[in-house]
Image (tube, rainbow, N blue to C red):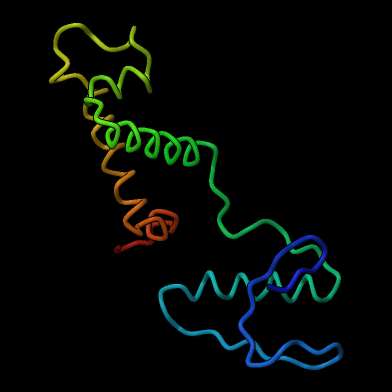
Length: 136
């Protein structure tokens, strides 16, 4: 961990860093190359007294809210709650109809949130954080 101007940078090095030494960044051309290149540029900026800028692909308020709801839904399901009870907790009891729950759009949304939560905890969080590229 290399801390520069209140920003932590995760760096792998064969030996501890030395002041005044020159270093080379080696980046793999894999699926995570774009993220690695962005992180390398942030590190270079920080090392040269420039602003590191925002973290890579900061979550929008909408995406943050969806991930939060997904994890809440998953926790509620793990505690033994029904989809209806989860829906009432997330969206409010007044939005859940007494009848026609089986075909209501909030039921489908509740189920998708639980499934998204499962994907997050199964390690799919990296995939969910990536932006979709054409053809994927």
